[in-house]
Length: 196
Image 1 (tube, rainbow, N blue to C red):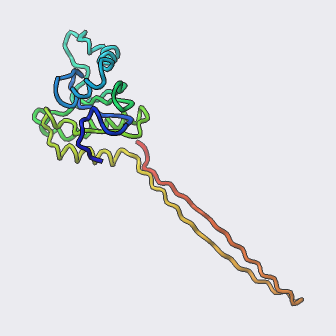
Image 2 (image 1 turned 30 degrees about the vertical axis):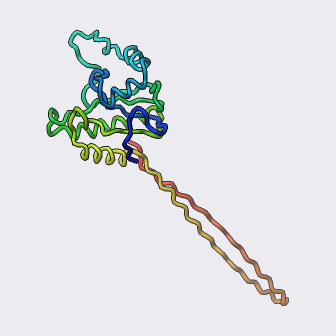
């Protein structure tokens, strides 16, 4: 389902909300990450600081806690979701030919994190398409392709087979006995894509 709505106030609950993020997981003051950060409140930033030592800038080499294409899960705090998946988008201009593969891996990571926390519903925005300039249509195609591949399709096929057997026995004593046997067999097959 595609919706045109503020990511921070979806009109329905999801188990996991994917949030376009930056390498430092900092509120840039604009865009989807800003809206989500404001809605989640100060608890989100406290959780990130407490759970990611690199966010406190303790590293002398100033290495960010996440790199482009990586994702991290946190509680959702004030949002109508159970979990947030902070995905660092791919910069279309910097990544060059590797951008498409990196975007595929990023979306795959969001589904992996969703499975790890037991999420059965996930909202994924057009990640990387804002300030990182990834083409919107291409991002949508990648997200749909990964979703189709990652979500375990279950096909329930029910076959109902009815067998009717009629036996007629004639005895020499002019006693005619007719036996009718009806057998109903219901077979249910559940086909699932093997997990990897």
